Picture 1 (tube, rainbow, N blue to C red):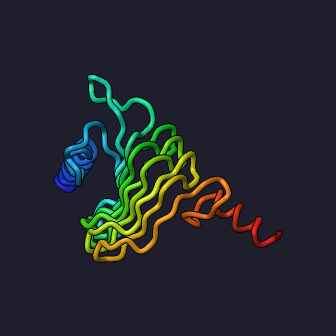
Picture 2 (tube, rainbow, N blue to C red):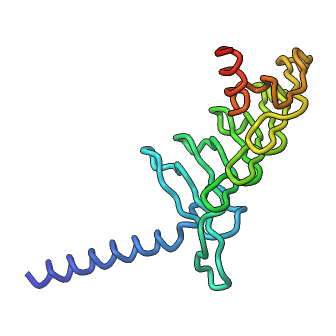
Length: 181
């Protein structure tokens, strides 16, 4: 009986100790080792990363504040979307990828959670499809649409009374106003 107790105690210690080691090395399993800071992951059903949150750390390696970057993955460790956050809002450059996890699908810039700045969407062959600008969450300025060969198919400039991207609040309001008038 004493042998079984010692075996169970040793087994419990090994399991607990290995779990502790795995928890402390969460950064070592990170799919993007180039990012500094503490990494916290949620997993897909196939045990590959689903979302990796990056936290800034102090000199001792302790997390400080809220996470400042996110990378979302599809099953199979295929990168889907990545970008920076500030106060739980998108901030800075965000990239999304096609289902292969490598081919760039879009690049958008955010300020305080709103689209702001350059906005590009790409064809699956890597050529640009849409090249536009946002200002404070609304499409603004020159927009150019391209076909898959790189030829311009449409070009226009938006203002406060025109419909441009058809996705922002301004375009929605202008569309609604035109329908109801």
